[in-house]
Length: 385
Image (cartoon, rainbow, N blue to C red):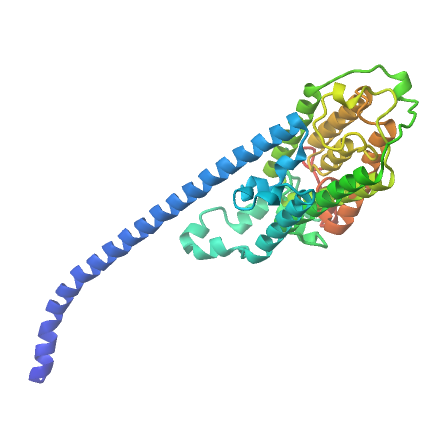
């Protein structure tokens, strides 16, 4: 061994002893940096949540103002952002409300296109392997699955519902949540634009006789009727989000189509209040353009569409029963013609049939059960049937 090699080997332990503290210091600095970035991220998240909370409170106050004073101008986006402080004339023109809707729709579409989409599996791929495989194995999940192959002969566990993500693989058309909201917004825009246009084009809206109204007593439900509708919607949203979130995008798209088609009907058939109904000023009316927004019924149609989209049969039957009671209530309160309730339910049923052909199991309802049969599954007494 040469002297140089001997000296290099003798200095190696000393170099290692000097490197160890440096590595420890670097590790500590990296950990402190990560903690600092995590604290900044939490602070930014708290700031976003605070701003969003105050924005929601602001919108709720505006909605209450619209309901009390019947002035839809409160939802003018230029007024919402206080643009009149810099440009006083921007909220005073008649076309500012239409421009406000156009601005909001354009901003939403731009955000939908500009925001990057997070591909499926990114979070799982970035986690360590040990964290990704803490659950049961694939074989164990397959053995405990509630759907069995017909040739397997094993029965499913009672009370277990089919896994909807596995069934959505059969859907002919995929739709994202953003596109669902975009289609819903487009349908609502067509709906409100049709109502606003016909309100300016038609000087008076005639009443149409209703033989069903003539044989029913008048019942003024007032605010309790709207509260019942709000309760229905709250229960429906909870069921959709907790039990079948994969169907929400398709349901939003079907709702957008329903409101768009309803707007066309309202534009082509501008009829007034039923002849046996009291004046609008004597009734509790929460919705705009209530004097000529009748056929087809919006409440009954939307409730029918949502009820038919529920996967679990018991919930679906319960929601359909509540929809039928609400439709009967609209007739007793004279808020709709009998044809409105029937036409709204029929239009919703047709859209649901279209949605099941278009989106397959993602449309919810009985489409999930049919998909289970098509892949060889057998629904149990506690599952989808």
